[in-house]
Image 1 (cartoon, rainbow, N blue to C red):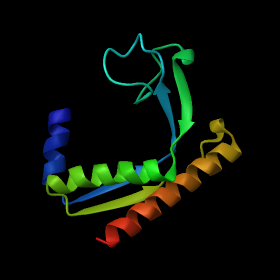
Image 2: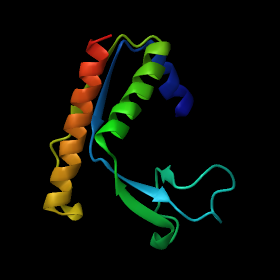
Image 3: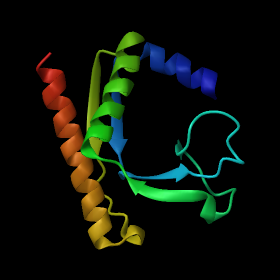
Image 4: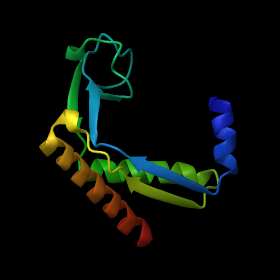
Amino acid sequence: FERIGNECLKKSKVVFITLGTSWVYTLNDPKIIQSGSLPKTVANCHKFPAEYFSKVIQSVTEIESSLEKIASQLFSIGIEQIVVTVSPVRHIKDGIVESSRSRANLVAGVQSFIEKFNSK
């Protein structure tokens, strides 16, 4: 699937990115990671005990930086346009306040990215 996805991506001119939450999990147990520094953001933490992880909210600056890196990689393979959206779905399991904070950071991070990108 990865190969097929890469081929499709290279043929695309427009990419849509929808952000859902600014909460991430970081791995804090050095016994699991062989190399690199801790904490390390992980994609899936369901296979290990919860105490190995910390839940943290990404800052506006971190979100902007991540979008810049993604955009750079996409433009380098020929993507001409990137559309970034913030999902309207609320993550109630995180709590109403936490969900609102997360969405606010996403919106601010996307706006900051767009303003910086448009100023180039």
